[in-house]
Structure formats: C-alpha cells, structure tokens
Image (cartoon, rainbow, N blue to C red; front, side, top):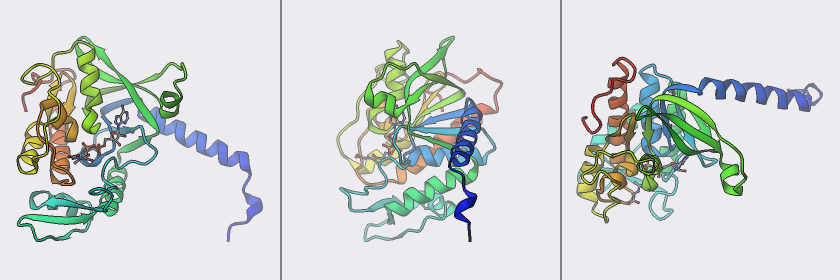
Length: 274
Ligand code: 48H
C-alpha cells in the first residue's frame, strides 16, 4: 500500500514539470510534425514512429481522437472497409461483420483508444492542448510549426508563440485543412487543380474513400495533406462515418514522408508527385 505521508505535493508538481519539459524539448526538432490527432494523424504517427523516426502529433483538444469517438451522430460505431482491416488488426482493434459486402464495423471508442495507445507505444509523442497557429516557411519550404496553448487561443490573450522545427509537416486537421490554408494564406501555390484550396465536396461515400487516399499528397514543399484535410484541400467527397479511408490515408502519408526521409535534407521531389 502507498503511504499517504510519502507524497509531498510540490514533489508531484516538480516531477510533472520536469517530465513534461523533457517531452517538450524532445519534440522541438522533429523528422515529422503531424497536426491533428484524428484517425489519419494517429495512424500516420504510429507507422512513422515504428519506422524509427522522431514524430509528434500536436492536438488542440484535451482528448486525442478527433472525430472518431462520436461514430455516426453519436452512435458509437464506425464502418471500416476490408482493405483497412490489416491496420485494425495490427493495432489490436477488434471489428465485426456488417451486412454490407466488404465493410465491417468497429466500436468507435475502441478505435480511438487503440489508435492513441498504438501511436504512443510505437514511440510517437502526442502533445495535446496545443494549438498550431501558424507554420514556419524557410526558403519557400515549410520548415515547422508555430504553437501556443489552446487556452491562449480560446481566451485570445496576446501571448507570443513557440516554434517546432520539422523536416516534414503533415496536415491531419480534418475538414478545416488548417495547415494547407495557412500555406495558402502565406502565398504558397498548392498542388491542386486551381493552386488553391478546392473545398470539400458533398457526401458520396463510395468514390470518397478511394479519392481521399489518392488525394493524400505533398501539397506544398514540406507539407503533406491526409484524411479529411486532403478531401477538403483537393475538393473530394465526404463519406460520413466510414473510417477505412482515414486509416489508409494516414498510412499513405506515413509512406510518403518515410520515403522522403531517406533523401538528403531539403531535397524533396516536386509537390504533388507521390
Ligand atoms: C492543433 C488541430 C488544429 C490546429 C485541427 O477531424 P479529424 O478526426 O481528422 P481526420 O481527417 O483524421 O478524420 C476525419 C474523420 O474524423 C471525419 O471527420 C470524417 C471521416 N468525416 C466524414 C464526414 O463526412 O464528415 O481530427 C482532426 C484533429 C482534431 O482533433 C482537431 O482538434 C485537430 O485536428 N486540429 N490541432 N492545431 N490548428 N486544427
């Protein structure tokens, strides 16, 4: 049994501060910075960490998981296509049959918890309550993130941010595609048909799933888009609570940056070339 007297309150504070500072220092200079801890972000983080790279996910909310938890309209089940089942199996997330050919179901709480745990266990850092408010662009290439506490953003306090250096940034911010939007706002041409953010198309689940994976690409030098951020930036359809495409998009984003990390620093191929 733990003796209550053995715990000194300020020792608790000191130990938490030291451990957190160590984590924060570790993520200051990364191979890959992922913004958004949704299904695509967590999948990419797990696979990039597993490949031995320094990767962290920055999430503005308290709980990682993005749009997974709520399933469809808060009914906590999601649909996952057969093609993505190997990822569920790899992460130890159970699934069960549906009456739709080629599609299965998973408990959305188990999916969120399983992806979070797998990313952490693979060695990725998840930095929650941190809002990415801007990007660093050096010599025309995205070179990192500008971060602040979410509480600073919410209270609109005038507090200057800190920065994170990263060889590759992945936008996993969902429908907002916030990081691609920041690149556009800074005058960068995006690798989309218009050179600008196209906007998410209407619901059409079948094509949406294939398109979200196809649209997972380097959209500006140093920036890959994935998940709903890829759909929104490239103008493809939405799919509702069908999550296979999010996992497969996260896997493709991971593969893209893992391949690029094998190149010498700052020698990425032209954006848009998978
Ligand atoms: C820090 C940020 C910032 C920021 C946003 O929406 P997500 O779950 O993302 P995806 O693309 O992995 O998954 C999408 C899926 O959940 C979904 O919504 C689907 C399939 N919809 C289909 C449909 O038809 O509606 O997660 C994005 C995460 C969230 O947790 C945000 O809080 C976070 O990104 N985020 N974190 N700094 N600037 N912007």
